[in-house]
Image (tube, rainbow, N blue to C red; front, side, top):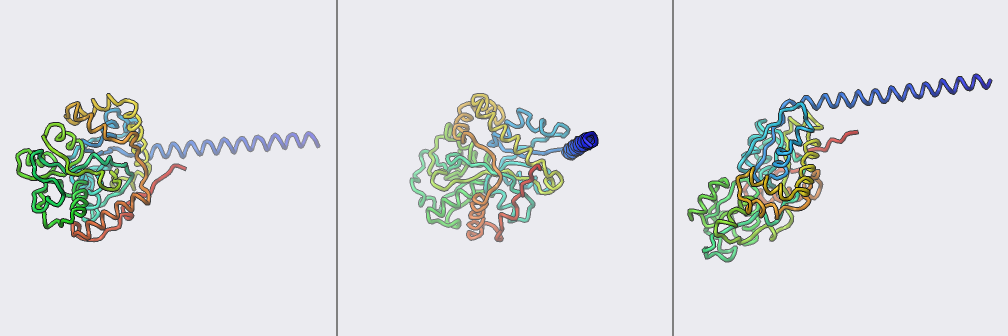
Length: 331
């Protein structure tokens, strides 16, 4: 009887070990299957701007190549968010970084996009600048003036808040829609009275453009920058965005640990002088992590969309939540 129990115990143990081994084998097969699915990302196209430091570091350190070893990584530079979202809408870009305003205009124009994640935007990295000899000293004096800005960019939203605070309507100023490089030329030539711009262009003109900042982001509540993905790409590769965001957060840690090297990289990648690059980076939050979009961020973005609709800057009401990417987690 004791011998029978011993054999039974041995049998049960062997069966348990066998089942455990089978389960482990199945888990390995599932993991391998998931890995194979990710290698199906043949080409990953990233859109970036000169101000996208996390993406610049990610490119320089080849962090995406580590996450997607069998994929071709393409980098496409854009002067501002609206141009990047145009490319994303037609499938030329899979993932990119923009300010808070471009995705609102894109969604209002029925362009497909997903809010994948967000980053807190430095409140001194966006401002309205004047020539140092300008007689404008108060916001109310912007009435009737020519103001240069990139249409559909974060500068667009910033100016909307400035005008609202000043009690001035859009019809009472002359917006001059120009991308950053053209706006800088117009400003230097005195063809416009003011320019609304973000870093690193803001730092560049502050250091060598003989300007004064009439108002910057410190006058308003916290604002955000966003990481946007192409819905077709994320539907086909549901785990890819999480890997990209992980790479970006690794880049953020690299920046914290290599401040001097980050300044050098920023200058090299953008063509900025060391002083300009350092000024722009000094304003950056430390750390500046990337987070999944939450309810507070969605509400912040919805408030901007509602303001734009009320001011007739977009043709219809939109619901930001409709464009938010549902996070995919590994189980």
